[in-house]
Length: 488
Image (cartoon, rainbow, N blue to C red; front, side, top):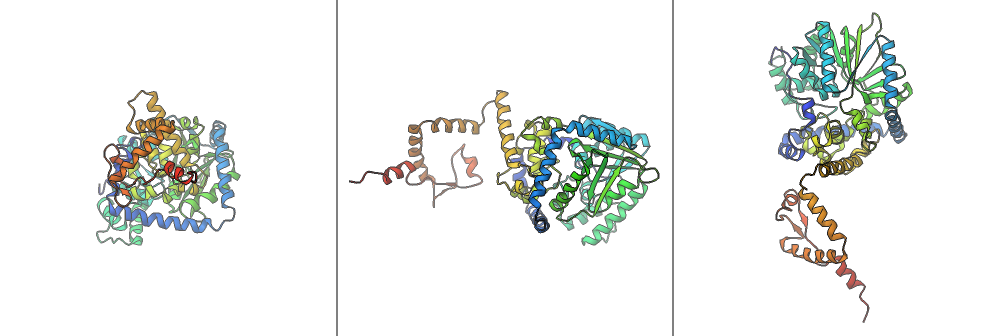
């Protein structure tokens, strides 16, 4: 909408419930060669930068273990830490609001903005506001929300959706970004080139007007220190600093899992997060504020604490470790599935490996049933995670929950379930297993050069994307008998 308010792509709450299963969306994404080139180039670059700065720290594994321990301990007493945080924020001039779900959170923020009389707001990049669909809720109330992070701005002006936690516009190249700016950015120079410096300057000029005019800023939180009521935002462009200091009113929306107990704990995460996310030793802009300071910065501060499924995840002893996530995106950058399919295929605000374990728990496993299967279980995400979330273990756990929930609902067994039941029946009997092995040798008729490229239904689904090895000429039992035959 050139010259008008910000473009609002459909996103937020609805995208936690995928419009189509991951396998369908991923297959379409795999057909986009440009998308794969963009993703491969970006993730390869980020991986290289991260590896270099991580290698500088001899105690990196100890830091990871410390981060894991802090998060685990915090989750065990989450209510205590949240109550202390609320107490400290209130004591320092802030106002705390509690929201059980996205609807309540959006209603609170909309009311707060309306009370100021503002018709537009500037926003710092925030995953939780994407999760609850805040921009759309504000738009429905006649309030324009302007994203100020460069990548989020690209997504917003392009009527698009983010595809990466750290770099929402990772799926776009600079030529595409130029076209988006020319179509959607009021006042863009028609002679704008696709040089990075020129694109950044165009965004800077566009956003500077928004910053100087805004009376309300909205942010998320990277960390919240319970003992002092201090909020912390890390970013790389300076837009966050502008949103956090210039407006008279600041509204911060925070998922309840972002709390940490002490300042000493913050020191651990300030080493882990920059290296794992942007491949930097420290973030260029680390902003912290505690309540309201008369005459300095926003004079009205509101903290909105959002549950939206988090306590349900906390109730699962195995699944709760997904709440340890510090949103660094390291798991996305090493994931072979994400690198080929991109973030949109997940149908979720949280893409990649962490999205495959977090989104099903926030919405209920059945609403995102395909996501726990969006993995090869290679374990690269676990190795990269700065707080040692065992994502492969969680994926298997959620797959089991999905099967159990289907069974409890009395649904017709799937082809996979029938196949597994038949395999179990065969494997329980040595005689049946021997007969099955002898019968499987007939599969050699379908093979060529030791491989089977096409199997009949229902096994055709397997060979539609991969070859199957042809059965060997001799079963293990036959080999064993031949090797151990008594000598004449």
